[in-house]
Structures are given as structure tokens and as C-alpha cells.
Length: 257
Image 1 (tube, rainbow, N blue to C red):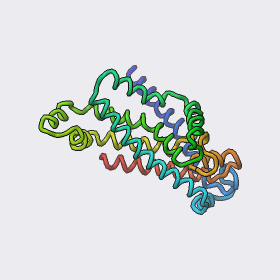
Image 2 (cartoon, rainbow, N blue to C red; image 1 turned 135 degrees about the vertical axis):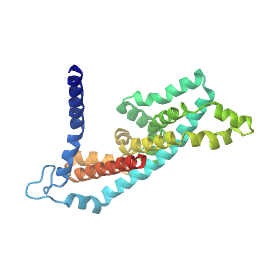
Image 3 (cartoon, rainbow, N blue to C red; image 1 turned 180 degrees about the horizontal axis):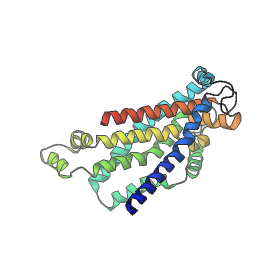
Image 4 (tube, one colour; image 1 turned 180 degrees about the vertical axis):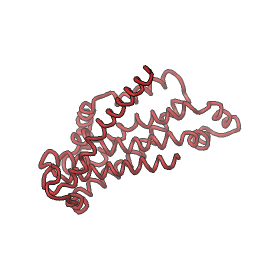
């Protein structure tokens, strides 16, 4: 009886937490269909005017494309660097490698505002303010820890005797990495790539500090829309992002089943 009561209690708590996280997201959907020119629920009828505004507005589409291609470049760079770093530390497996791992992970522990301020002061000296290269470099540094953690997790399941066997059969270090280690840790590398893309696509604080006019990403566009006139197009964009996330999650679940 007591066990059943505890089970009901924890199940109820779990559903309440899920509702707390999901319901605010679902509220965005009817707001995106409002027939008014400001944020609010529909008054007279449902309208797709704000979706039409998003797809017809060059600024919104340009910001979306910028976020996508910057995210892909950042994910590629961070995946290559993070994977190389993780494999190097795995090969060394000493105290220095452990210290290097902790140093690389520290950006996750630093508040975003502190990171952004550091980027701003350093980027001013380098002349990278309001440049795409500056945004890519900053996002790559922010995404590196996530890639390294993902790859390290895959490397922990790799038997060290496998690359040793490859080396004993005459393979060079580069051949061992390319033909043995990388294929074995592909899931971790792919996960790191996805995490890096998400970090770059969703990052806003650093972009606000190191960009002015020339670089416009989607999160920055949303932020400026909230600050200026609370355009309902923001709700339409948020709804599209939610739908894309759900489709990607469904696709991943179907591939695993």
C-alpha cells in the first residue's frame, strides 16, 4: 500500500513538472495565430498573417539563414577541434590531460554575461566586433566543452587494447585515429556536432555584446523585436522552432525503433 502511494506521488510530481515545462511553450501557438498587431490571444478569428510576415520579410529570413550557416560552421569547427582534443587527452591519460580537460570545461561554469564581457574586451582589441568571423570564433569557444564532453563519453567505452593492436600491426597514429578510433566514437562525435549547433543557434548574450548592425542572428532579431514593439511574428518564429524540434525528435525516435 505504501509503495503504491509513493508511486502515485512521484508519477503525479513528474507530470506536474512536465506540465510546468511544456504549457508555457504551448501558449505560444495560439498567440502566433492572433489576428491583432500585438502579442495576445486571437480576438475575432485565427490568422496566419504573422507566419506570412515571417516568410515575406527579408530581415527575418536573413537572420534565420545567418543563424543556420553560422551554426553549421561553428559545429564543424568545434567538432573537429573538440574531437582532436578529446582523443589527444585519451591517448595521454595523465594528470596534465586531466587538467586540460577541466580547463576546457570551465566556460560552462562561467556566467554568460561574464563570458560576453570578456569576448567584447578582447574582440575590440582584435578588431572582430560586428563581424561574422568574430561570432563564429566566440561560438566555437563556447561549443568546444560540449563537443569534448560528448566525445569523452564515447571514448570511455572504447577498449584501449584496440588502438594498441592497430599500432602493433604497423598502423601510424594518424591511421589508428582515422580507421579505428573515429569510427568507434561516431555517436559521440555526431552528438557533439548537434550540441555545438544548438549552442551557436540559440546563443544571444554574446551576440548582443560583440555585434552591432552588420551581423543579425535569429535570437538577436527576436530580442530586438521584444524590446521595440513586441511583434507577434516572434510567436510565429517560436512556434516554427518548436515544430521543427518535435519533428527532429520524432525522426530520431523512429530511427531508433
